[in-house]
Image 1 (tube, rainbow, N blue to C red):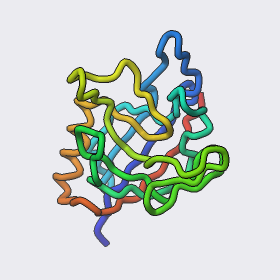
Image 2 (image 1 turned 180 degrees about the horizontal axis):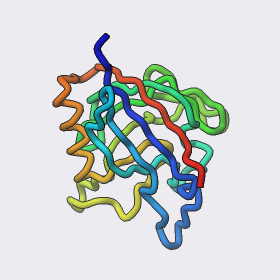
Image 3 (image 1 turned 180 degrees about the vertical axis):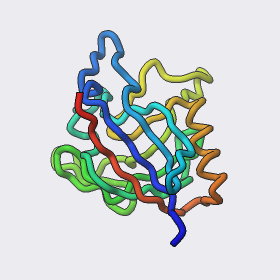
Length: 168
């Protein structure tokens, strides 16, 4: 049997301690692209929602889900990947369109893996203002996408993923 690639995200519980006054801590979590026993990509990410429009409870809950690769960019400068079949910490499901029907706010935007690139400034945002997405620093995000492409993965392909929490 041929090994299938998968994505592993390990959340550092200190990520929940984000302070908007200091814009820290950020990028304490880890994202890996695995293929069998090989680690094809390893880097930091932000997996806790820190956007002013939401609470940390919009963050993905630990567990398994799928990622649909290289989807419509819309407002993003670089390719995005949709998170599907996941649940947030409020217990609300993220559907096959990477969308969520939130009890308080109705239909929510897409849950994605994307970078922190600000096309207006040509640099990273001051903080990874995630409203529930997994964000990767944009220079490293290029490496992540290159590793996916090196496996021959194409737009619309899906890979299994898992988010785990690391004990402090």
